[in-house]
Image (cartoon, rainbow, N blue to C red; front, side, top):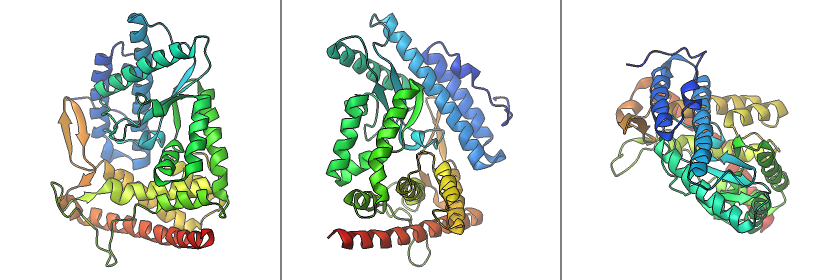
Length: 365
């Protein structure tokens, strides 16, 4: 049994000093188990920050080990500066203990040919993705990974890609823009990450103008996921399959909250990727009624906590879990009350956004 850790003095030394992927894997397994053991002992936001500090430490160390392996294999050091970045829940600093990969790479200028640069970072991307998979990060089902050239580009090509997505404004292209909007720097040249963040901010500045179709496209994508609660205030659960009767925390509660707050943050020019920080900055701007934001903050706390309350399992030493709350948990009085209250908040948010969407659609016809 692992020794109980002090939540105010969590150390990641064994992670940052791991000298091989295998040792990094063992360090992650041990730390993951320790953190799961203190889940119920502290506020969810504090616990979540510690969990994501662990993920940052693991990913940063994986980058170093990847570089070292390529040198040992005869490919040399990186031919250009780069920035390893994350998206999705990792980009927002909201990963569970068992999140998968959502990452990319920004490549700076180098002194070698374009072909040499491409070959090196193609190897780098594939190797790093493999290392991360080996230390407990499953491959992204949507292929938002450093091994995919779509998410591994030079600064210039990233800027072209972002402009291309914003110009088409179809559902898929706007989805990619929303993924990119959650960019967060993990390792490497911070300046490269900052440059892409500025490009995204410049593009999304249009989002502050209610009379353009980019705003309509972003809003259309945002209202796609709705709260899983019906008109009678009953929680909507899965109707069939292996999770029949269970509740999908991720897509029924968490994602609708993330999307709505992201839309408001982009609308008001907020650059933070964290949902908690976005809510706080919206509060500081007095852009949204305080009472409304307080309800959003409480609902988001509930969503993040429930994501880590799902039944867990152990696979190859790693803790893992689905994003479904079991029927038995939903029936617990406290959880049922919190879930219905949070879903009620999301429903109210989406009613407001849907009215805004209908108004915008009429204006753009």
